[in-house]
Length: 116
Image (tube, rainbow, N blue to C red; front, top):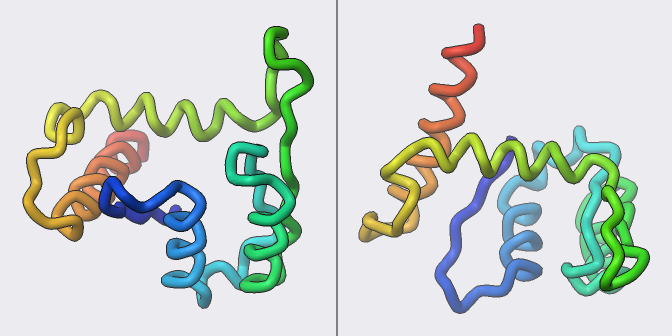
């Protein structure tokens, strides 16, 4: 799992590109990446494809006012809900971004240790 924490004035798109850039060696193992059209769609997919050899799939929503299940979306939402159980991550109480990143990593390590 890769994670990256940025300042509030960094867009999600730029943050995702920074995440891939920081972890290029590990992203060589990734075959497929799924992104939704909120990441500016095909432009974002092309930029990620130029950095890695991964196939980028842009998941589009059908209609704005109709509910439809987006495949594999639950994997990400489940991970966010697990992080919601850690009180220290509820609010931004860390002074440095690196400390926040380590707290997220520790939360996931604790989750894995509880399961195995």
